[in-house]
Amino acid sequence: MQLTFSFIILFLFSFAQAQNSCFSDSFLSPDNPSLGDLPVRSAVSEKTDTFDVVFHIMHLGEPLGQGINITDAQIESAVLSLNRDFGAWPIHDSISIHPNGADTKLFFRLACRNPQGVASNGIVRVDARSVQGYETDGFLFIAGNTGNNNQLVALSRWPTEKYINIWVTHLIQTPFSGPTLGGGFGPGSVIYAAGGGGLYLNHRIVGCDPDRTQGYNIINPYGKIISHEMGHYLGLLHTFQGESCTETNCNLEGDRVCDTEPHNNGRSNDTSCNETIECGTREPIENLMNYSGVLCGNIFTQGQKNRMKTFIQAFLSEVANQPACIKSAVQDDILATTTLKAYPNPCSEFVWVDVSSNGLYRLVDLHGSTVRFFELTSGKHKLDLSMITQGIYFLIPPDSLKLKACRLMRI
Image (tube, rainbow, N blue to C red; front, side, top):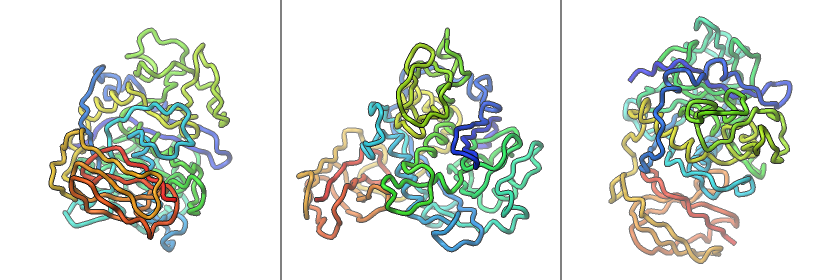
């Protein structure tokens, strides 16, 4: 499948100050056929769509863990934050403004096979200094497609009909902006070759370190900017699209979603997270597609879920649901009635879990790092946590499934 949509997605922080500014309005037009002509769906499939993501770390020769060359653990934490926001998982409750977001039934996993079928962890590390100008210019997008972006992407791009590519860099420049601290592109753009789409992110917005104990050099400790960008990638507009206070037809105006309030982005640089009135109604500060959402929010709405599901069906159906690497005794399309329970909770050295599906379960910490694996069969199991330090953890079902994470507290 060749992706030929002609829109660009950018969420940008300037180097001068961490204020919101976005150039998506120049390209992400609702009148674009790939966005404006989406059918309105009040109900969509509740089957979970799974996407394989690959992170391309375009470093400058730094040792692992320094500069752009961020660690595997930091990348894993970014994937955790993606699934937290898209799955409405009960993780990092302190960021919740209105904790009633929709489970979008979308799940992201690090690709476990490369395009040649060889086992992979979904992370590619590339010394991009071989491309002239990368050290000073980073990813340079120039009108007419004459920048270095194609050369850089050619170093590591995986097929867009199977993977979501995420390039991590130190600098992104477009014809409409100077150097930026963050950014992301949709599946294609008028200045980018078709078939090379993905997300482009500064290394300082990749990762999740809510209590700042991991030492990640990130500007957003909860790692929510990547969720904003992925929302764009999957067809969502800003909640303030058009910056109008009125919508006579919410299906055709604004962000084309009827359960997000019209607002004009009058306080886009306000990081206080205080609820205010815009256009006679409350601003949706909890919504990840609002500018305040990447600082204050944690949800997608049901209408946004419907739009993403519709977009995926129309444009990304081949990308979703690639074969899983870990096979369990049950099929990947296991019924949503699968259960996962743990008790006592909080627990000390041992915890009992009751599961209804077979497979490999992961125990992850708040930063998304896997601390233990458990191969479980349907039924009740006693798990030894005596070697685990005190804290909050999440038991994640097999990656071929998409279920709610089970929160455990080890005391």
